[in-house]
Amino acid sequence: AQSVTQLDSQVPVFEEAPVELRCNYSSSVSVYLFWYVQYPNQGLQLLLKYLSGSTLVKGINGFEAEFNKSQTSFHLRKPSVHISDTAEYFCAVSDNAGGTSYGKLTFGQGTILTVHP
Amino acid sequence: GAGVSQSPSNKVTEKGKDVELRCDPISGHTALYWYRQSLGQGLEFLIYFQGNSAPDKSGLPSDRFSAERTGGSVSTLTIQRTQQEDSAVYLCASSYDRLMTAEKYFGPGTRLTVT
Image (cartoon, rainbow over all chains, first blue to last red; front, side, top):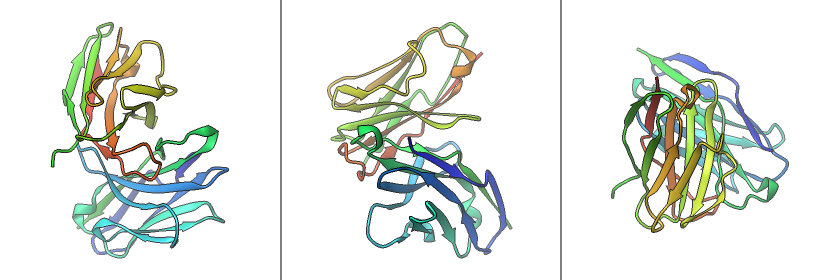
């Protein structure tokens, strides 16, 4: 079965600094990878996704992530964060392990990003 | 257009009572998912609907949990004889089809507190 590990539960950073949120996954088959953001008292919003092709994917709000198959990682990065980026971020994987052929997502535990002025 | 909506937004119930949580997916979305978000457990898959049928109920934690979907639209998650460990945020998501690549749209969730 697939699993997703987000290595940092909390990441504090100052405004305009760069940030990297780490995500590692385990799966024995091809995977699709996603990053979601959850603002307080809201549902999850898709930031970006890797389906195939270029390993560097760009998403909304200036975020990008790089798929590294050899390291089974999909780290999220932003070169300069804003106060408004304060939220919880979830990495998720979808694959067809076990015969699953629909979009069931397995999520990491989440990383709380706090941007300080 | 309208997104996924869920009701109620908050529900406080006494241990042992039954609760019903409602999800209204985006119109035309055939796939619908329920997830549970709780402290220490993260986001857990509960059940998947394609149309009105549920091919995967593997995430339902006990037989106190059930769900249905009618008219290929609204879904209701029912928890019978609620326990304190059922306290969590219940999230619903829908997508236009069942493909793994199809984008899922999440509702704001229902926060359930069992006292």
